[in-house]
Length: 492
Image 1 (spheres, rainbow, N blue to C red):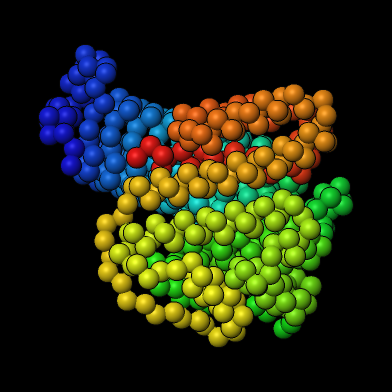
Image 2: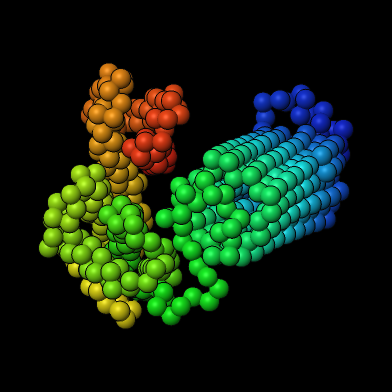
């Protein structure tokens, strides 16, 4: 619960609260868990306040500053917020469903995994906001500013996106099923792997959008500009109304013991990337779902050929178990490197799980055999094991992060080696980056990793536009994101 003194001052009224804030500008009010449901809240300075897990449902809020406030897990269901200021606020996992947030300033706000179903966001500004995995079903995003926002894997099913600005937004793997996009500006937007099944398009601006691997119906193709179809059509996952029987998914279900779950799931997830890189002309969509300890992999062949993908699965299983060397599996040097790194990471994940779950019998060879047997079996595959659970280990998290950082650096090194050939004028700069990487291997501290990541990002951002189209440069962007995520575990 929040600080009782802060709550007492708040109950004294607007004048007393704002005066106290003016006299104590360095104090961040702690109002966490406050119960303000159905209250009328107005003219308050709540900037930088801690309102995590607070209940503001059905409240009427007017001229209240909540910039940089902590509202993680807060309940704002059906709230009405006029002249709202949530600039830079933390709203992760918050419930804003059915709220009226028209015109609210959400710039640079953190809204990952927030619930915004049926929310009115007319004229709201969500520029540079993070809406990763946010649920925005049936939301009204008319005239909403979303430029440079991150909506990766967000669910926008049945949403209204009219005259909205999504220039430069990251919408990779977002869901737009049955959504309406009218005069939406998607210039320079990243839509890789997005699902547009049954979405309605009208006068959408697609200039320079990345549509690689989008899920779309045959009837919608006429709405995509020819220039983008020429560039991305081979990667489109096109469905017609009523799929033919032969395109039914190839399903594999493996129920892992707890100590094998994380590593096993990671190996299965990696198959999608391997499939795309080894067979770029074969079109299929791979989905991984988890139900408890059960991991379900479904492969949807777009042009039939289920036998081809069955064989591809079998070969992947042989590599995982060591019965086929990565060099025998592919002559792509970078793919071979990635495969070896993935198996190395799986080994460390299993070691960490063994420590956390007090299971001295867990073996990496057994894990690889499980995955191999599971992807070959057409019926659900279950492995039973009895273990005792104990507390997790920060040391394990650090060890795993260190190994993953090493793997990321190995992959980056391979791409930089390619770029020295493709961009000879940059050879000296690339050599400096490689020297910095050697320093991280000797001392993988958070400062070293983050310093290198920022330096590499500046170098990539400074490249000419034509250079940024090179595949190796595009892949560096993904590894930059991964490095950023790995810094956290090193801090503990």
